Length: 236
Image 1 (spheres, one colour):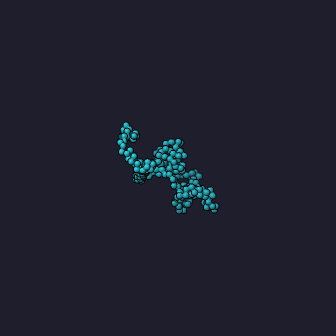
Image 2 (tube, rainbow, N blue to C red; image 1 turned 180 degrees about the vertical axis):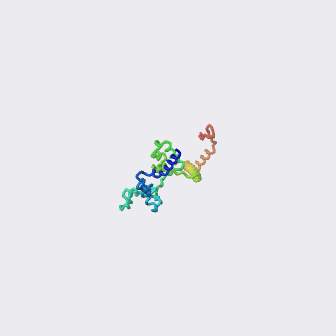
Image 3 (cartoon, rainbow, N blue to C red; image 1 turned 90 degrees about the horizontal axis):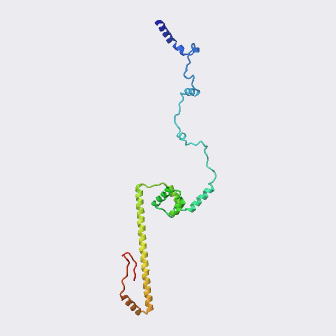
Protein backbone atom coordinates (compact mmCIF):
# COMPACT_ATOMS: atom_id res chain seq x y z
CA UNK A 1 0.00 0.00 0.00
CA UNK A 2 2.81 2.35 0.80
CA UNK A 3 4.46 1.66 -2.54
CA UNK A 4 1.25 2.29 -4.48
CA UNK A 5 0.66 5.60 -2.65
CA UNK A 6 4.21 6.70 -3.43
CA UNK A 7 3.75 5.83 -7.07
CA UNK A 8 0.46 7.67 -7.19
CA UNK A 9 2.12 10.76 -5.67
CA UNK A 10 4.97 10.61 -8.17
CA UNK A 11 2.60 10.18 -11.05
CA UNK A 12 0.46 13.09 -9.84
CA UNK A 13 3.46 15.42 -9.63
CA UNK A 14 4.62 14.32 -13.06
CA UNK A 15 1.20 14.81 -14.62
CA UNK A 16 0.49 18.17 -12.89
CA UNK A 17 1.64 20.41 -15.81
CA UNK A 18 -0.46 18.40 -18.24
CA UNK A 19 -3.52 18.50 -15.99
CA UNK A 20 -3.32 22.35 -15.73
CA UNK A 21 -3.50 22.65 -19.53
CA UNK A 22 -6.74 22.16 -21.48
CA UNK A 23 -7.30 18.73 -22.90
CA UNK A 24 -7.15 19.92 -26.47
CA UNK A 25 -3.73 21.52 -25.91
CA UNK A 26 -1.85 18.51 -24.54
CA UNK A 27 0.23 18.05 -27.67
CA UNK A 28 0.21 21.73 -28.81
CA UNK A 29 2.92 24.14 -27.65
CA UNK A 30 1.94 26.88 -25.18
CA UNK A 31 1.19 30.29 -26.71
CA UNK A 32 3.80 33.00 -26.46
CA UNK A 33 1.57 35.49 -24.52
CA UNK A 34 -1.20 33.77 -22.62
CA UNK A 35 -1.63 36.73 -20.22
CA UNK A 36 -3.22 38.94 -22.91
CA UNK A 37 -5.67 36.33 -24.12
CA UNK A 38 -8.66 37.74 -22.22
CA UNK A 39 -7.64 41.47 -22.17
CA UNK A 40 -9.59 44.21 -23.93
CA UNK A 41 -8.62 45.96 -27.12
CA UNK A 42 -7.67 49.19 -25.29
CA UNK A 43 -5.39 47.27 -22.95
CA UNK A 44 -3.73 45.52 -25.89
CA UNK A 45 -3.23 48.89 -27.63
CA UNK A 46 -1.63 50.35 -24.51
CA UNK A 47 0.70 47.41 -24.20
CA UNK A 48 1.55 47.55 -27.88
CA UNK A 49 2.44 51.29 -27.60
CA UNK A 50 4.49 50.87 -24.45
CA UNK A 51 7.64 51.99 -26.20
CA UNK A 52 6.08 55.30 -27.33
CA UNK A 53 6.96 58.27 -25.02
CA UNK A 54 3.93 59.69 -23.22
CA UNK A 55 3.52 63.42 -22.46
CA UNK A 56 2.47 63.67 -18.80
CA UNK A 57 2.29 67.46 -18.67
CA UNK A 58 -1.13 69.01 -17.88
CA UNK A 59 -2.80 72.01 -19.41
CA UNK A 60 -3.65 74.24 -16.44
CA UNK A 61 -6.15 76.30 -18.42
CA UNK A 62 -8.00 73.20 -19.52
CA UNK A 63 -7.97 71.74 -16.00
CA UNK A 64 -9.19 74.97 -14.41
CA UNK A 65 -11.84 75.49 -17.05
CA UNK A 66 -10.44 78.80 -18.26
CA UNK A 67 -10.88 78.03 -21.89
CA UNK A 68 -14.35 78.45 -23.24
CA UNK A 69 -15.93 75.93 -25.54
CA UNK A 70 -17.64 78.73 -27.45
CA UNK A 71 -15.94 79.93 -30.61
CA UNK A 72 -13.90 83.10 -30.32
CA UNK A 73 -15.91 86.18 -31.19
CA UNK A 74 -14.48 89.05 -33.14
CA UNK A 75 -14.99 92.65 -31.96
CA UNK A 76 -18.17 94.25 -33.18
CA UNK A 77 -17.84 96.54 -36.16
CA UNK A 78 -20.82 98.63 -35.02
CA UNK A 79 -20.44 101.84 -33.04
CA UNK A 80 -21.25 102.30 -29.37
CA UNK A 81 -24.98 101.88 -28.72
CA UNK A 82 -26.86 105.14 -28.65
CA UNK A 83 -28.59 104.26 -25.36
CA UNK A 84 -25.26 103.96 -23.56
CA UNK A 85 -24.10 107.29 -24.98
CA UNK A 86 -27.33 108.96 -23.84
CA UNK A 87 -26.92 107.52 -20.33
CA UNK A 88 -23.30 108.65 -20.12
CA UNK A 89 -24.13 112.18 -21.28
CA UNK A 90 -27.00 112.38 -18.75
CA UNK A 91 -24.72 111.27 -15.90
CA UNK A 92 -22.07 113.82 -16.89
CA UNK A 93 -24.69 116.54 -17.08
CA UNK A 94 -26.10 115.64 -13.66
CA UNK A 95 -22.68 115.24 -11.99
CA UNK A 96 -20.10 117.35 -13.88
CA UNK A 97 -17.53 117.04 -11.06
CA UNK A 98 -18.26 113.41 -10.31
CA UNK A 99 -20.12 112.10 -7.28
CA UNK A 100 -19.85 114.94 -4.76
CA UNK A 101 -23.03 115.32 -2.67
CA UNK A 102 -23.70 118.81 -1.24
CA UNK A 103 -24.52 117.47 2.22
CA UNK A 104 -22.13 114.96 3.80
CA UNK A 105 -22.83 112.89 6.90
CA UNK A 106 -20.38 112.20 9.69
CA UNK A 107 -19.11 108.73 10.59
CA UNK A 108 -21.48 108.56 13.57
CA UNK A 109 -24.45 109.51 11.39
CA UNK A 110 -23.53 106.86 8.81
CA UNK A 111 -23.24 104.20 11.51
CA UNK A 112 -26.60 105.24 12.97
CA UNK A 113 -28.17 105.07 9.51
CA UNK A 114 -26.87 101.52 9.01
CA UNK A 115 -28.04 100.52 12.49
CA UNK A 116 -31.59 101.74 11.84
CA UNK A 117 -31.78 99.86 8.56
CA UNK A 118 -30.32 96.74 10.21
CA UNK A 119 -32.82 96.76 13.09
CA UNK A 120 -35.99 97.31 11.04
CA UNK A 121 -35.37 97.30 7.27
CA UNK A 122 -39.10 97.33 6.46
CA UNK A 123 -39.74 100.56 8.36
CA UNK A 124 -36.47 102.39 7.71
CA UNK A 125 -36.32 102.05 3.96
CA UNK A 126 -34.09 104.07 1.66
CA UNK A 127 -36.64 106.87 0.99
CA UNK A 128 -37.46 107.18 4.70
CA UNK A 129 -33.79 107.40 5.70
CA UNK A 130 -33.11 109.91 2.92
CA UNK A 131 -35.93 112.11 4.25
CA UNK A 132 -34.85 111.77 7.89
CA UNK A 133 -31.16 112.51 7.29
CA UNK A 134 -31.89 115.10 4.55
CA UNK A 135 -29.72 113.45 1.91
CA UNK A 136 -30.45 111.97 -1.50
CA UNK A 137 -31.63 108.34 -1.85
CA UNK A 138 -28.49 107.60 -3.88
CA UNK A 139 -26.31 108.67 -0.93
CA UNK A 140 -28.30 106.42 1.42
CA UNK A 141 -27.98 103.54 -1.03
CA UNK A 142 -24.21 103.98 -1.21
CA UNK A 143 -23.89 104.18 2.59
CA UNK A 144 -25.90 100.98 3.10
CA UNK A 145 -23.92 99.19 0.40
CA UNK A 146 -20.47 100.06 1.71
CA UNK A 147 -18.87 97.78 4.31
CA UNK A 148 -15.58 99.65 4.77
CA UNK A 149 -14.34 100.05 8.34
CA UNK A 150 -11.16 102.05 9.08
CA UNK A 151 -8.35 100.55 11.20
CA UNK A 152 -7.94 101.45 14.86
CA UNK A 153 -5.30 104.17 14.32
CA UNK A 154 -7.22 105.82 11.50
CA UNK A 155 -10.44 105.64 13.48
CA UNK A 156 -8.79 107.42 16.42
CA UNK A 157 -7.50 110.15 14.08
CA UNK A 158 -10.93 110.58 12.53
CA UNK A 159 -12.58 110.86 15.94
CA UNK A 160 -10.04 113.47 17.04
CA UNK A 161 -10.51 115.40 13.82
CA UNK A 162 -14.30 115.38 14.20
CA UNK A 163 -14.01 116.49 17.85
CA UNK A 164 -11.74 119.40 16.85
CA UNK A 165 -14.11 120.40 14.07
CA UNK A 166 -17.06 120.30 16.46
CA UNK A 167 -15.21 122.42 19.06
CA UNK A 168 -14.27 124.95 16.37
CA UNK A 169 -17.87 125.11 15.18
CA UNK A 170 -19.14 125.72 18.71
CA UNK A 171 -16.55 128.44 19.33
CA UNK A 172 -17.45 130.19 16.07
CA UNK A 173 -21.12 130.05 16.93
CA UNK A 174 -20.46 131.52 20.40
CA UNK A 175 -18.38 134.29 18.81
CA UNK A 176 -21.20 135.09 16.37
CA UNK A 177 -23.68 135.23 19.24
CA UNK A 178 -21.46 137.64 21.18
CA UNK A 179 -21.02 139.85 18.13
CA UNK A 180 -24.77 139.85 17.52
CA UNK A 181 -25.44 140.77 21.16
CA UNK A 182 -22.93 143.60 20.98
CA UNK A 183 -24.50 144.90 17.80
CA UNK A 184 -27.96 144.87 19.39
CA UNK A 185 -26.69 146.72 22.48
CA UNK A 186 -24.98 149.34 20.34
CA UNK A 187 -28.13 149.84 18.30
CA UNK A 188 -30.14 150.32 21.49
CA UNK A 189 -27.63 152.88 22.77
CA UNK A 190 -27.86 154.72 19.46
CA UNK A 191 -31.64 154.74 19.72
CA UNK A 192 -31.48 156.17 23.25
CA UNK A 193 -29.06 158.85 22.12
CA UNK A 194 -31.34 159.73 19.23
CA UNK A 195 -34.35 160.01 21.56
CA UNK A 196 -32.37 162.24 23.90
CA UNK A 197 -31.43 164.55 21.04
CA UNK A 198 -35.05 164.69 19.93
CA UNK A 199 -36.15 165.59 23.46
CA UNK A 200 -33.45 168.30 23.59
CA UNK A 201 -34.73 169.88 20.40
CA UNK A 202 -38.38 169.74 21.51
CA UNK A 203 -37.78 171.18 25.02
CA UNK A 204 -35.86 174.18 23.76
CA UNK A 205 -32.24 173.39 24.27
CA UNK A 206 -30.60 174.02 27.64
CA UNK A 207 -33.86 174.20 29.64
CA UNK A 208 -34.73 170.73 28.55
CA UNK A 209 -31.27 169.54 29.52
CA UNK A 210 -31.60 171.11 33.01
CA UNK A 211 -35.03 169.52 33.51
CA UNK A 212 -33.68 166.14 32.43
CA UNK A 213 -30.68 166.54 34.74
CA UNK A 214 -33.01 167.33 37.66
CA UNK A 215 -34.99 164.21 36.90
CA UNK A 216 -31.79 162.21 36.81
CA UNK A 217 -30.74 163.56 40.24
CA UNK A 218 -34.05 162.53 41.86
CA UNK A 219 -33.84 159.41 44.03
CA UNK A 220 -34.91 156.26 42.27
CA UNK A 221 -36.73 153.34 43.78
CA UNK A 222 -34.68 150.18 44.05
CA UNK A 223 -35.78 147.51 41.57
CA UNK A 224 -37.85 144.69 42.99
CA UNK A 225 -36.33 141.33 42.08
CA UNK A 226 -37.91 137.90 42.03
CA UNK A 227 -37.80 135.10 44.56
CA UNK A 228 -34.22 134.08 43.90
CA UNK A 229 -31.19 135.56 42.19
CA UNK A 230 -31.79 133.75 38.87
CA UNK A 231 -35.16 135.45 38.41
CA UNK A 232 -34.40 138.30 36.03
CA UNK A 233 -37.85 139.91 36.17
CA UNK A 234 -37.70 143.40 37.75
CA UNK A 235 -40.42 145.87 38.60
CA UNK A 236 -39.58 149.59 38.64
